[in-house]
Image (tube, rainbow, N blue to C red; front, side, top):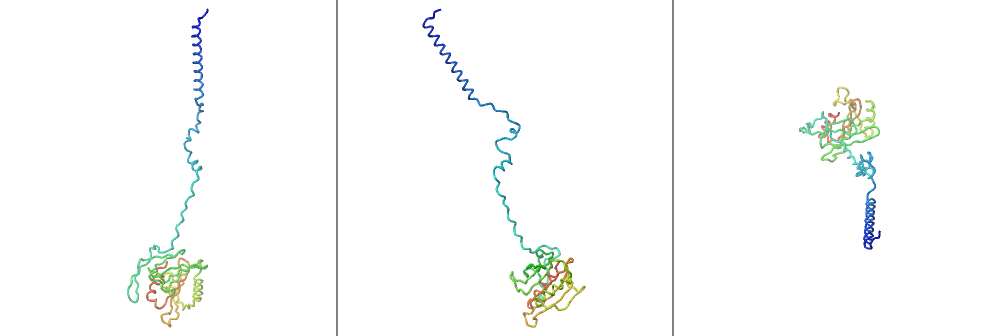
Length: 255
């Protein structure tokens, strides 16, 4: 069959248009397929349980170095001062030149020693002196925070090792000889003691005839809970009225 020229022209145009539409459709499908992301594999239970938005606390600490810990310096140990001891009164009455005087006390426990005593307030400055053989507690007379006289004091010597009463006495004699103090006779033994801890007592004096510069005092060998020790009171004649009774307070409350 023969086609007319016009019919053939229309047929060719329709065919070309159909081919163009098919090519356009294929291009669209290919573009759509290339734009889709690749399929994501299923997450494992471990990944699902640990979200990736923030690491666990342990990992976070490990990833960033922790600051160095700040260690505060311990406060310096305060000097051992007055402490509460129930058996030591808060005040006592003494007589100074015949006049009654009320004296406030503070319980004092020297650092490193198992002893305590009542210390008249504003009357003594305590010192703790260490030697290889013993610890000495020297209570030096004072007034308004200043030392009144180095020659007016109570000295309590506590050996660092357990010794006998005779050994303590020998050590006391040796030390007083070094200080040119001559102890005069055993004044008391046994039931004649003045203080509960006292076992033996002596007295001494020096330069008494020279006026106010005269020195006198007492020496004791004592014992507390099986530990012998010794004590020396040392005063100038002009301090005797005021400090004699204060010495007695310290020694009477010594425990």
